[in-house]
Length: 404
Image (cartoon, rainbow, N blue to C red; front, side, top):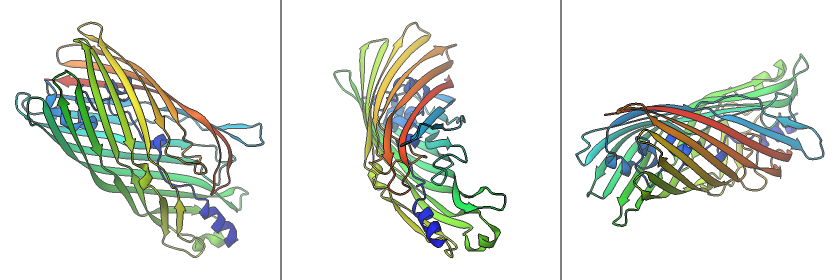
């Protein structure tokens, strides 16, 4: 029995994050433009994309919105003709920003609330990989007060402190039979409170091209004395832990962006993002009771990942803006480490959207993002789960803004 339990624990899926759980929906204008926004001063979402650009915004404003993520993942085990799908469950990562201070002064203030990491994957409780994972709900909400200062008329810098509130709920089956004939289950559930920072510089060149560079630091989510809920046969219950602790890295991201202005009505934004996933070497789970379950050290060995993005905005009329975008993102998950909660692979992103200025102060922005994650046939080194994953996502979004 202990050998079975040890094998199970060595196969524990990592509460890790990949690009599959890196959320890039922090502004509806930028989402409609392929997620590019580091090198342009579009709106209040510059608090996230580049704090250095905040001091170049022509007006103060506040905006709030959310996106609806329709994600569908499929798995076909090698040697099987059966395709299994995740359950349909919507998630709504929000984003809200405010910029204030005298627009004629060099110093401006900003505040952002957004979700840079999160996800929800729900498989059938009895699916092929139930001993790897049955569901994962994950969310990290960042709150970022920001200062932005215009050093000269053409150069701005900015920085903000980040407070992160994290939440995780992971569930899976256990190869033990309960009295009612069903399999045992495990649930790891906890919260974290941690800090990081965000900084950027924004430059208007003499040629008219704008340049932005930004960096968001790593936040290490420290989950302490969180709930470990094991449903196992009553005779074994006392040997199982009730609490666990773990440190989960939310990686740093470095970005460089360019803004081009071929006419007074058109903006072209180009971004390159580098996500420092290589810091995520392993996950250590420490339990308060090791009678049946030892602490685990599970290697991940992620490598850095990146993305290139391009978007265009055209003012079709004085009130209506049209936007298009595209991006390609490279997975940080190496061969042998793909798991059901992170069925990650390289992906193509296509986006579109529009903005309508209903009055001098009030406007609405809509976006739609399609993500196609390439199919990937893998055998996980820990669980031995072997088959092909394929995932697509459809993500409409809306935000409202008010300027003064």
